[in-house]
Image (cartoon, rainbow, N blue to C red; front, side, top):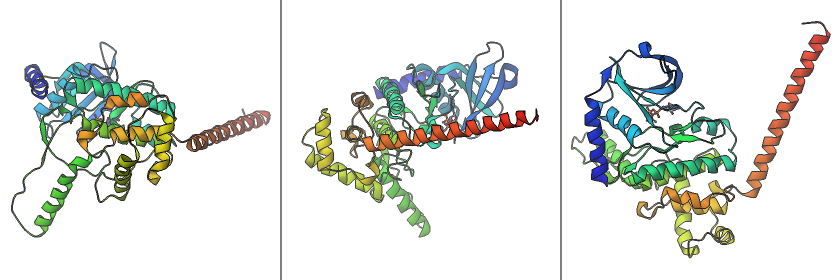
Length: 370
Ligand SMILES: Nc1ncnc2c1ncn2[C@@H]1O[C@H](COP(=O)(O)OP(=O)(O)OP(=O)(O)O)[C@@H](O)[C@H]1O
């Protein structure tokens, strides 16, 4: 699978390299606004002058992007993102003197990160809708032989404000299943625990630098597996439910992660078998209470975390598992009540504000100010 998926993609890159044309953006597109910026480039909303169709143009600076990595992301998005919740390229790619550019479907309602930071806890129904779509999208990508490797709220684009249709995008780090990549550790809970040795190696390198030791260090390599995406989907579920991260980084020196891992290990002793019976999940929850950062999470969602947030990569469940956990509560009743009350108070406050504005306007009209 790995060899053929990677080879097929290389072949597409080779063919498309022969038809890369140069173009002046302003001759063919009305550029409307900036949709976002990432570490590799910027993304603009544009309308094709002749066809009138809106699209997202992704600009990759040529000085920091290799042609191969540009073509790989473009071709992956064009030929393998054939699921409605994957952002597909539109068959338009070109270069300018400063950029490589390709066009893809545009999410016109921002990304999931903006929803998480602007709302005090999303409703469960909306969260489950998002996770159901992502489960399908990621399973589809895996079935075609690729792992996304960068699932996070900033890479999930919205096609409507209620998250009825979301699309996973940014395939810059996607690689074929089974390929080997250099392990890169970064400070985020999305970074999988199996990359921890790379953090140790970074520390060792810094220590040697400080001591003036010139000796080269060997890179650590890992195999690309679908379970990398399962982990990220678990962390994402937690972010959507709580509006924050479960811990800072998935390493043994992080207190939050250590507490989670201890709970997970203890669960092996308490939970004799995996169950889909809610009262059994509740009993397991009572026998082995989760660490405090999970106090608002229901036994059902904790059971889902036991599938996705498994420290040992080989034991981690697939993104498809999410589908078995939909429909039931993902938050504790007390948390749901609290959110409902906060939402009602918010609605009441905005009603009072609106009435105040209307009364003010009537008063001004009465005084003949208009
Ligand atoms: N197709 C799209 N529709 C709507 N918004 C988009 C689209 N593509 C990108 N964006 C916006 O632009 C931002 C950056 O895009 P993207 O993640 O693809 O860039 P990147 O440089 O590869 O980012 P990263 O630093 O995560 O690797 C996204 O977070 C999102 O807000």
